[in-house]
Amino acid sequence: MHEFETLIERGSPDDFLFRQLDPARLPRHLAIIMDGNGRWAKRRGQARIAGHPAGVEAVRTTVENCARLGIPTLTLYAFSSENWRRPRLEVTMLMRLLQECLRREVPLLNRHGVRLRFIGRLEALSAEIRKALDYAVTMTADNHRMTLNVALNYGGRAEIVDALRAVAREFKVRGRSLDTLTEEDVARHLYTESDPDLLIRTSGEMRLSNFLLWQMAYTEIFVTDTLWPDFNRTHLLEALVAYQRRSRRFGGVETVGVPVPALA
Ligand code: IPE
Ligand code: IPE
Ligand code: MG
Image (cartoon, rainbow, N blue to C red; front, side, top):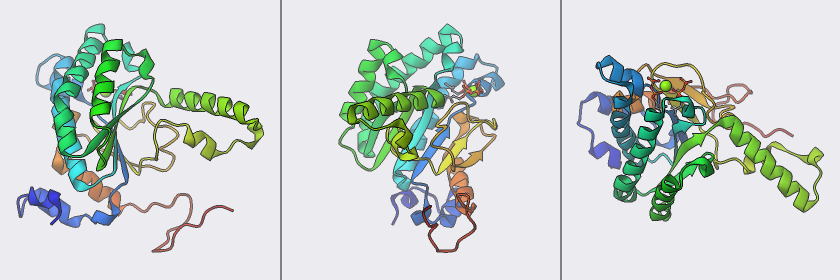
């Protein structure tokens, strides 16, 4: 029996959703814009920053659920290159929360076979934070069930600029002309190894906010009004069921069981 199934109560809404899923057609790569922590706290009459610790709980359950479901790659947007514009207290609190969380959650990641990676301009983070990142990455490096990418000081445009710089250096070393540059050359130098099949954004915002701009050319987008701290297993299953009902055409026409031929 699927590990996930053993944890679901028979006849519950999650059971109903899970039964609609085809385990063979789950997204290979799921990306999530975890948004709405501030609004969640404000609705409770608390300061915006009180929403972030509540958001951490939702991260934990989502990581566990994705690993149990057998999703090979999960990429979470934790802090954008534009989030430095927030009040200093909020930024400090987010960094402290990250540090605490990394220290505490390594055993959980190991238990679920999750390999942790960070994407973004990490060199701009403090030495203390980088040490905490390195520790968690090293401690989980041998896990193979799921790769968890956490986007930190991440910007999609900055990522493309970094890839182009790396490509230009590589071409110079190899003596290749930039006129021969292909999409694959750029993709090879991006922070991620694959493109997300599905993007979930919580809290109702219909925008990408500079997340994985290159990689999301053909990603299916699922926006839910649920605020991130409220995002649970049921919401995750709903998104996965909706994803499996989509018809992904990649610019072609609907094909039933016929693979889309590569461009000549
Ligand atoms: C997402 O929640 C967390 C981060 C961006 C770090 P927000 O803090 O953006 O919450 P809202 O959008 O203000 O409700
Ligand atoms: C996107 O959320 C960034 C993260 C979730 C880390 P924001 O709350 O920063 O996005 P905008 O400002 O509403 O576009
Ligand atoms: Mg927000």
